[in-house]
Amino acid sequence: MATKQSPRTPIQPADLNAPFFELREVAWLLKCSVDTVRREIVAGRLPCSQRMKGSKIRVSRADLDAYHEATRLVPLPSPRARRRPARAAA
Image (tube, rainbow, N blue to C red):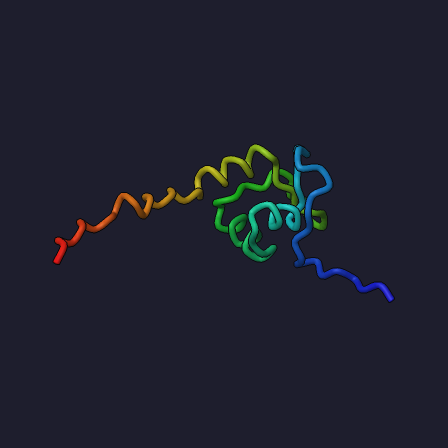
């Protein structure tokens, strides 16, 4: 018996170079939940390109790339850069 997948389950996009993505595909690309994607859209941090009452919300590739750049974390300095001075030999 086949089970129906939840509408909140992120799915891998069929085409990673597509011009538009659905919410579930955006969640998979950003490695977060569909609810998080919805909250980001409502907060205005992630623009949605196509939003019509009663239809699917789609996010453009350009908007997704801009969101990723804006929210990307700066990498931490290498652990070697914070090395303690060597102790004196006993």
